[in-house]
Amino acid sequence: MIVDYHMHLRDRHGDEAGGRYLVDRLELHVDQARRAGIDEIGISDHAYHFRQGEAAFDHPWMQQRCGDDLDEYVATIEEGKRRGLPVKLALEVDFLPGREEQVAALLEPYSWDYVLGSVHFVDGKSVDMDPSFGDAEGWRGYFDALEAAAASGLFDVLSHPDLVKFFGRRPDPALADALHGSAATAIARADVCVEVSAAGLHKPVGELYPDSPFLRRCRDLDVPITLASDAHEPEHVGRDVDRAAAHARAAGYERVTVFERRRRRQEPLG
Ligand SMILES: [Zn+2]
Ligand SMILES: [Zn+2]
Image (cartoon, rainbow, N blue to C red):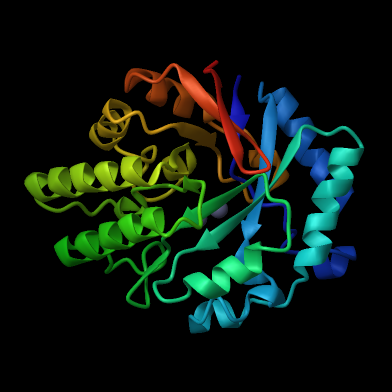
């Protein structure tokens, strides 16, 4: 089984095209997934794009982007399921400390197959848009937030779990090792999955997420995994997911997680 459990359906040009969340566009994602040898995809648009998330995401960058309707998004994926498409209903949700109740209220009305938790902002600073982010203090802050996201109970999977290396900045190896070990322990204790993502191959760091030593620590603690392209366009669905699967295998993984209505099971990887 090969899944691609992180991608964005939202059409950036949707206003001109007559909509942002369209079943026709979903079919493009499924077609590309088939070509890439993917058995099942999950759609995980950013929660901050929806007006229902306005109370949950109080960062100014997000507040400028919350115009879409979450009901429309969910209805599109549900319609795809009715048509027999191999798609799962998911959402990529930013973890912002102190907004846990608002996020829980945002998620509550819908039948998610799984929810991705992402740390994109630490103390108001962008992890993947601000090239000055990623010094030792940034690494500590990022992994503190990742551990808190795991412990929050809000998420099924932690996305791109070492996004902090986005610009290729790394601290002293001993610090990285300590942070990886602590995070893996917190993730195992929280019983959530980590995502093995090919997205970083196409970012300044040019590598898969997460680093092998971090992934091996997760493996040692029986933390389950998903696989992801993090595609933002239909043609990128499944891109390099074979490399993500090989990365997981090299860390000792032989199974991949499949979700349905927030229940998970393990399937043979590949
Ligand atoms: Zn993300
Ligand atoms: Zn994403």
